[in-house]
Image (tube, rainbow, N blue to C red; front, top):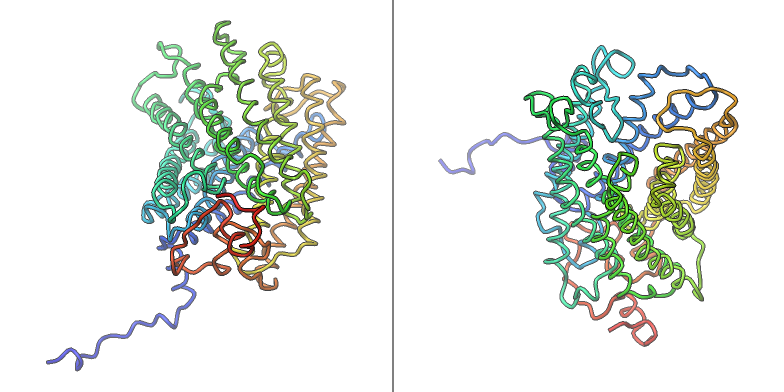
Length: 557
């Protein structure tokens, strides 16, 4: 009997197009789809972390407030900090790196597509595992599941004596699982940048976006590994009697701090370097000038990568280290300001004399420039050990940290959303809504984090549930909380802009910004294969060469 005469059962894929489409996304190994999955995942957790931040600030809006209980407050700031660092900022930056690096270097995909998919799902499961702790009878408002040890989880808070139940286990396993995903993504980025560049694209002609993400990926490999080791030791402590961090059995609580901050401070640069990458691509395009001092920018990036591994213990000036150790970390913390300052001068020099277009991406990058400068200045203040001793664990440190994360990284990230949204979606965003988002978020940011420095200087400790009236903190906390609502309104406008533009925005075309890196050579959104013919480049601005072959002032051979 021939096969033609057999009545094979017919699959009904056409009857379930939505399920088929979902299956394609879940099983995809396409770097662009995985990048979008990272970004959507991060936006969902941004909303969750934002709600947690609002609860924290409502609780602190006035003295003796009882909006939530002390235990719920502890859970809120633990979940907020952990979510923002590990499940908002890192995934969204990995998402942009995944989406853009192969396009920018003229490749058809990441070096290891299946590892790329595995890394995303490990990261995604890590976030879900953290929030599984809320499921059940205890949950957030009950007696024991949601983590309440802070995003830093200092010993002995994490011991079974002080952390009853499985709350710390959820926190530990969530970070452990997502850490494997982060390391997998970092390895993939390094391999892709070093091995997958198109013909003619030497390291000296590579976009700064690729350079900065290459250094970022190297830092992830170096910094996440100690955190992973510490998480394993913590599990051994809790269940196998390891006593690594149990001071009563000869362990060291300070050792946990070293392990955590060996991760925690390079992690700041893991987050900041991609923000620098966004600014380094957006500012030249909207200034209509090539980046000033490309080689110096690359050198400064590599210097930041090296120095960032030697500054972690400036978080520990108050634990009683030796004078020589304090001196070393004071000097290394000051030293890292030098390559960072070089970048700020180079961005300003790029803008100087340029024909600046004040589109929404550029507005966010300009705000990022000045806010990150202010964050760096307060960081230098805190690098001085006696000053740090006075203000350690105060709201001054909280303000400084959020100036870096929100004023620096998040502002640059919003600029990246608006800049590359036309490429990812094929639609233009609403410029009006984009500027409404910018001004609401800018006003809210400065109301919150400018004035947060003041109660810190007046002695308000961080991580407190409530406070006594009459200490000079009342008005400042009211202003800080009002600013949070401005920021929340800005986030809602931003999400509304993305949704409205995706469904109703006008077609973007392949290159709406008249830019010059290779991703703008492809259609919007790009096809699965990226490039029908792998491009060959001769300069750092290949699209400008193609569009303006007779303009020698813009050529960098």
